[in-house]
Every structure is written in structure tokens, then in C-alpha cells.
Figure (tube, rainbow, N blue to C red):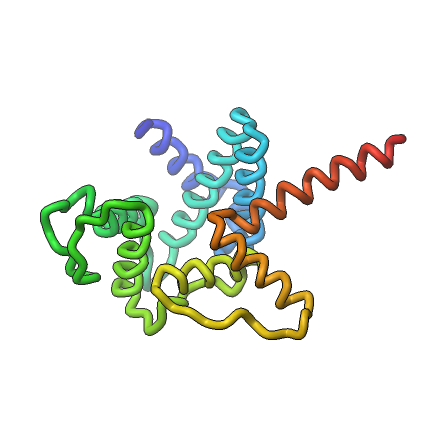
Length: 216
């Protein structure tokens, strides 16, 4: 595995170097954003269709995005970092945020909580607290990307608030579409469903029916 990853990094270095690929050489972090988003959605589609070959391919495409961005970052004149730095930061983060695995007899310094959570919800709450302390966020709701789709972002905000023990009345809107949609997000959270995934699957079912009707 290490040899293959090293080879991937070497290929990207060659593509970005003089004499490499002009298209790859001119890309920036910003220009690659649409590709990263597209690959993430294609990965989700492969998972939902239980497409093992597609899953393997799309994981590779996402890995390419990581290596590509890291190679661009390594060229920064003032604050360079490499894919090794990215991997090391990730290892440190995973260990730090899983004290129940790596330090079960200690108290987590970031959250102040004992590390004996016994259920998924307790571990999720502690994860959020550790993350909030690391990033010095003032609110449990900080850090939810504005670029998320509206449905996914609403669900993320509701989940964060619920884990933090926050409560707020359902949005008033005199039956507006937005208020009804948000009420469905609250319902999905209460029943343990993924609103985004449910809508995506239902839309796919409807699309199949529409295509079938088109062919008749």
C-alpha cells in the first residue's frame, strides 16, 4: 500500500513539474473545488447503488483530490505543507478525538469529560466538544459550512444543536414551504433518518419512473 501511495505522489509531482501536464500545472485550490464536490457526490452514488467497482474508482478519484491539493499546497511560498503533513495531522486528530479508544483511563483535556462514554450519542457529544475546543468556537453551531446544500446544512445544524442540548421552537412561517421543509428535517432527526439521503433516494426512484414513462 505504501509503495502505491508513494507512486501516486510521484506521479502528481511529475504532472505539476516543468515538462508535465499544462492543465494540471495551472490548477489552483479554487479551480479544483468543483471537481472535489463532484467526486464526493459520485462516491455517494456508488455507495447507494452498492457498486463495488464504482466505489473503488470513486475513492481513487477522491484520493487524487487530496494528493492534488497537497501538491499545490507544497508550492506555497510562505506556508507550504505536504501530503505527509496532512496525513500526520489526520492521525493526531483521530487519536485526540477518540480518547475512549486510545486513552480510556484518562480525562480528555479538550472537553474536560471523562472518556468512558458507553454509547454512540455520548461519543458524538464528546467528539463535538473536543472539536469545538480545538477550533476555539464560540458556539456549538459554528463551523457548519455555508456551502452545504440547504437540506444537508439544516440537518447538520439540528444535529449539532441536539447534541449540545440546545432547543429552539420550530420556525414559524405560517405554513411556508421553508418551514414545512425544516419541520421534516426535525422529524428526520427525531426518527434517526438522514433527510438528505432519504430525499436523494426518493428522487432517484421518481426519476426512474419518469424515464420509464418517457420510453413508453
